[in-house]
Image (cartoon, rainbow, N blue to C red):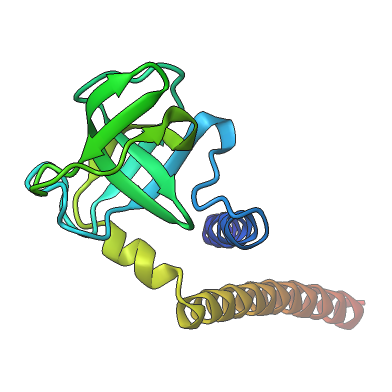
Length: 172
């Protein structure tokens, strides 16, 4: 039952994220002020690597040296703030030679507060249509198997009751 709940949460969050990205143009929804992203390039090496999962917290105030995630069109970028002038910040990947074009802080999704190395490979695979179909198939299979086991147990109980009734009839 826990597995079915976990699968439902994964699928639900996947649909929520897909909806936000395709319909609203929001590449990283931030329910409860938190978001998750996968690092797709080596621009932040050695601090962050490709396939690291980063946890992002929505913040109102950003400072130089904060590692942030910002939206650039429909893509997300994870870079470090190297300069700040009011509501305009300049970012740069630690492995990059040049800075990014300055952006308004309104495009920043949040500050990276934690990362999990290489977990993003699993997340990326789980986001594919084939994986979604496999997860749904596994959920349906587990649900059917659970129902069959329950039914088998009920049949055993009924057979035992029938057997006891027959023994009572024959003992008279």
